[in-house]
Structures are given as structure tokens and as C-alpha cells.
Length: 577
Image (cartoon, rainbow, N blue to C red; front, side, top):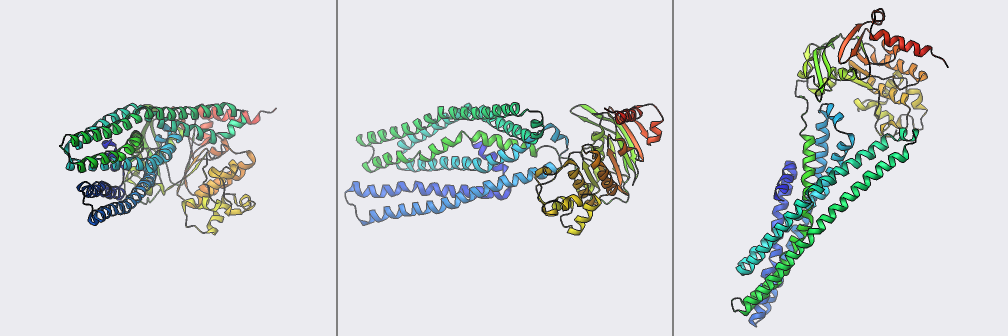
């Protein structure tokens, strides 16, 4: 339990940790104010048992009680506010820290870890830490502290009864320890089931179009229902396990209180304890464990706090790429790869590739699916670092550049375009938030999307759905190109940018791409012959290696994958129903 509290405090940043430390100090004061009720009762009892109650006893007792209650109210309010602020700021800060950390993770991380798991860490896990963890940690700590201080006060008045309460304190922790061990595995299962539920819901929502097209609504609905039901069963099982042991904690505290009362009476009847102390110990037996009972009811959730901290730290511990290079502005934009090799989980994807892309030339990568085209492009743009070999920009290793200064040189247009839930204008000016409306319109015109934007209900101020759900594939692609035009980077990466558009849209899209790539260094992945035939160089990738390279005319004149590729496309075009 204390290890988890220590781990949680260590998880917080310096500011929030300081707030929690102050709240702990206030918690000690709060516990003292609660414990001072015992001297107040003692003062009144001394007058009653002595048979000479006077105003001093009454006023003194009321004064101590008033100071105790007032002090507790003031301190508890401040303590609760600090804990709440520190808890929510910790969760918010860690969300931002995780987001910043993920900016510089190798893209391979996102292939191995599903969007649902990442989403679960930044939502469910952070919610647990911001809301549940703060209450669990602080209420548990406060309950233990208050009970411990009251036991100290009782030891001062009568060490024998104090020792009984101390023994009950120990037995309580023994039972609590068993409870936490028995619920440890189910706590892990609960978080795993919550993550799986998030994954399945995201998968269903993101694939809803395909689900409806293929009439799989019932099938996927059953999968989602099954996952939700499993999460529900796990939560229920956890409550059952906790409820098996929680009553025993209550039994221990109540039994200890009963033994304290009986012992106090026995000591009084035996003549070894004054009547005043006897009554005081009996009253104290009802008060001493009230905070501990509350702590015990929450302590079962400590394991969830423990796992949540571990899950967040697991993301933050993923090694980022070395991004601490120099802020360099290259004089030219020649790109070169020298004998680069790259593997996913021991499976080699790129095997000893060397290539030179001179400034303001276009290189197209073609090849079978899974041959390594996209991976090679990502290595050239430093989405990943090569395991072996060297990638350079303007003759300098890309690792010499700070990551942000390197990315200033690249613009990307992917097959799957992501647009944000914002206005079209803000989506276009994403890389340059300060850009004027005139610049936005100019970029849109060059990307051949001005006409359809002006036909929308609110033109450039039209808010599009998350991911651009309210636009067609071609419209999203052209807005993506307008965004790249706005950035005006000297190197352009096109990843199957025309793969999902119809022939009517393709003409406008090719015009937009021409406007984007004019006088730029370009490397592209494409399956359409129109897209690649005018490239300065075509590289054929197969099994992670460049097996052919040259111009369209050079490659078409000799046997190989490229000529087969062209023949297949020509046969497909000439086929008629």
C-alpha cells in the first residue's frame, strides 16, 4: 500500500508533488484536530467524575471542541482543494507529456500497439489517475494517519488500552493485505478488459462503412456485446472479491473497539483505571477506527492505481528517436541512402538499399504489395531510423538535424488523409496557423479545391467532421495537398496519393499534385502508370531491395518486374465487358 502511494507521488511532476506534500502536512494537522476531541472529552469528564463541574470545564471543553471543529473545516477544505487540483493537473499534464513523447516515437510503435490501447492509456488510465487515484491515495493515507494519531493519544492516557487498539490496527492491515493480494489479478484483468472494450468500439466506429456494406452489423455487434459483457463480469467479480474481505475489516475494527471497552471497564472495576479514563477509553473506542474503515474500503483500488501508473510509464519509457541534433537549414535538398537496412521484430523489410535523389527531381517507387516501398519512404523522411547504413540530407546525416528542423523540409500527402474537426480554412493552414485568408484561398486554388469549397454551406468556414467524414476521398486529398502547398516544404513525399479516387477526380488531383511538386524534390509511391511514367527515376522494390531502376523508357525496354507491371496495367485498361 505504502509502495503504491510512494509510486503515485513519484509519478507526479514537481509542482503537483509539492501540492500533495502540502496536503499531507495539512492531513497531519487535520488528524490532530480530530484527535483533540479526546482532550475536550477528558476535560469535561474530569469535572463530571470529580463532582465539581464548573464554567471552566464547560467553556474549556467547548473551546477545545470549537477549535478542533473549526480547524478541521479550514484545514480539510484547503487539503481537499490541493488534492483535487493536483490530481487533475497530474492527469492533464501526463496526457500532454504522453502526446509530446509520442511525437518522437518511432512509427513502428504505432504498428505494434493498437489505437485502442493508446487511447485507453490517455483516457481511461488518466481518468483513473486523475479522479480515482487521488481520492484513493489521499483518503487511504488520511484514514491511516488519523487512526495512528488517535492511538498515540490513547497510549498517552492508558497504554494498555492503547496497545489493544494498536493490535487491532495490525490485524486490520493483515486482513487488508490478504484482500489486496486476492484482488491483484482481477484488477489487472479489469484494466485489460477496459482497454479491449475501447479497442473494439473504436474499430467498430472507424469501420462502420465496411460493416454496413458487407452486412456485418450483427456480427460486429455481437463481438462488441461480448467484450462489454466480459468487462461487466470482471467488474462484478472484482466487487464480489472485495466484498468477501471488506466485512472482515469492519469486524476487526468493531471487535477491537468492543475489546477496548470491555478492557477499560475491567481495568476500572479492578481499580487500576480511574472512572474518567474508563469513560474516555470507551468513547474513544467508537472514534479511533472511523478513518481506518474508510481507508480499508478504498484500499482494494490501490492495485488499479499501481497498474495505471505502470501503464502510463510504459508509454513514456518507450525509447524515442534521437531528436537532439542541431537546427540546420540545408543549402540543397539532395537525399541519399547508403546501404540502409531495417527490420520489424527481426523480420527484415529493407535490405541494403542505396539510392541518391538529386534536388528538384522526382523518384517513383513501385513494386509488389509488401515489398517495402512505404518503409523505404519513411526511412528517407526519418519516420524511423535505419538499423544499419546512413540517410543524409544535403550530405549530412539526418540524425545530425533536430527532428523539428528536419521536418521543416518535408511535406506529406498520404493515401489515407486525416482532417481535423475544424473549419476547412484551419485545416488548410494547419502547418501555418498565422496564414492569412488570402494565402489559404490561393493554396486552395492551386490544389483545385477552391470551387467545391465555395459551394459548401459556409465556404471556408464550414466545419468538417472528424477525419473529414463529410467529404469525398478526392476532396479530402485536394485539401491535404492544399495543406502541403501552404507549408511549401522543399521535399514532397506522396504515398499512393491518387489510389482511392475516380477517373474524373484524378485529373484535378494530378493538376493539384503538379502545383505542389513544381521545383521540389519528390519521392512517391504509386501504382498508376500515369503517376510514375514521367518521373526522373523509377525504382522497382522487391523483397526490400531495389531490383531495377531507370526511366520509364529504359525499364520498359528490358524484362523485369516493371515491364510486367506495365503489361498488366495495359491489359486491365483494354479489358471491356
